[in-house]
Length: 322
Length: 273
Image (cartoon, rainbow over all chains, first blue to last red; front, side, top):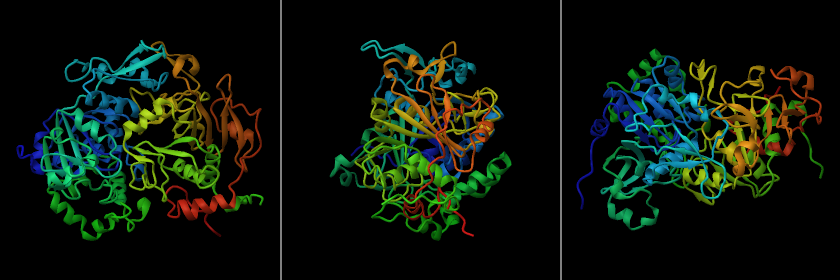
């Protein structure tokens, strides 16, 4: 038995320091580590540098709360519950946030490069677009490309040296300090089992220097090792674990609970302005802990979201959240 | 039995666009679909003329046959019946490898060469409005053989100069200078194709094989070519119009509203009376 990896929600947030380069599990509005995101907001974390395969509701919460200085990714919004990231949009207009745009495939390949210890990723995507516009290197414009914490270049062009397939784009590995994951099951030693699409979680966990896994449940390690072929992340890639039921709410979790559409719609509708965000945070984040948050949501709401175990999604929640 | 087409009062624009999009799909093709109307269109094709189309959702569902409409590509409903459920690395490797025949995409602005913007409105360095960003739009558009864009038709959106080229059309910028060149020239051996149609709320548009310039193919019922030309900021080619967009059939409408989207998540029903 290795060292005890269990920590509390509060400790998880404390591991993430001001200025950390941070990334997350999940996809847009699915399996985002919201309980830790809320705790980061309560602890007034500052100057975070988010590097994500794609953003989502969790990014909007952190950005709205003023925790983020740099967002390096490709997409933000709440899917059908909010068509764009209103908080990000506002902070960009006010120049309080640097956005570095990549494409979705590039961000994925950047994490795959980091996860395999490669010096760069290589792709042929998006030639001829403004993603390749040298004027639009925002971290470069801000003078932040130190080659230590932030890569020296946004990308580099090269020609295929082997088969002459033409122009190639070299993209920097997504080096991140911490990955914060939210999954269905983790073992006591850190083995992770994800149900449903695993999105970019295996690469993200492997790329990060420190990986924190928040799970719906901590299960006996030997239970997961009986069917090792069903596990997604290796024990020693995980540094810290914690159990936090409904930790992804209002985002959804395959087999456990659906996305809380009305909650996200309410967030999107109310947080176009900073005052609106602050008001929302006062209502749902500050002065709460995870249990009081769940109490505030209430059993009827949580039961409505709970997934049918045969179908893996809720049949009580009307789709679309209308 | 002859196909029974619906009369104009039996369908709305979303129905018409959904059916027009579904008809772009051929059986056995590998198709990449994003959240929203494209999802309904592809499932409609799967339940009508293209039962063996191979559906890919970007979040990691490969050759999916969802019995119920997912609310987004990350949804638990995506992977039921799929050949494989995994993650984005698989999905993008498959796309870059060249398996994808057709992708359905959206956009806020389009120019006459099919360059699409989903990133910002106004100067990128001082944007009036920051939008969602690229997502996988440029990736699918770079890797697939054909892409179809589904868009709201407003004059400001059909513009000679998009604020930001998020997704590559037929004439794209050659960096570092930024002069426009034909896509084929720039992509070299990785060239596979590009935008094949734009389905807007006004009509269906296609691109000239040689010049890559957009032209009006069909007008949605009730619209004239001249009206549609007036809804573009650029000089739309209306010399090749091929009549009206085929209306939905009654069977297609039944599948959309009774089977695929009874809760009206993406496609509203026609209000009766």
